Image (tube, rainbow, N blue to C red):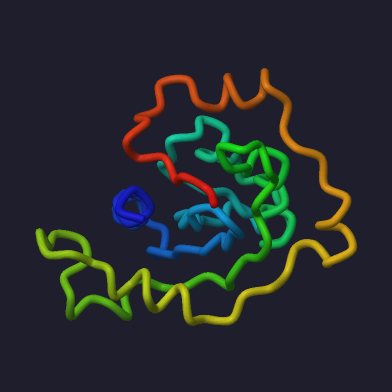
Length: 155
């Protein structure tokens, strides 16, 4: 999440509102992305141990479409596709009293907030039952340069 906050502050510095969106996962870490809009299209900036879960060009017409761009690349170390839902954008200015841009304190309250907001499902229960695991080559390429200590260990 700290990467998304940093990205949101950087985007704000060049004129975008500091917006984040929460991608909710099952048996995996959630992923917070900083989002921005150019000419009506959504893009995202994020930090992840998975190289495939970072930047997205502003070419997506909706937040659902942007979120789905992460779907095939969002899997846990067992290879299980784990992305399940996304939130609406949340303006980090609501956390200005925490000095979220510069504080050295923990910003876990923002994470708790994002866990509690409404999320919209990306796949149905029937679809989840039929999901394929990622391939070994995709897993290997997605983890290039990752920090093993920071990886979520699935159940």
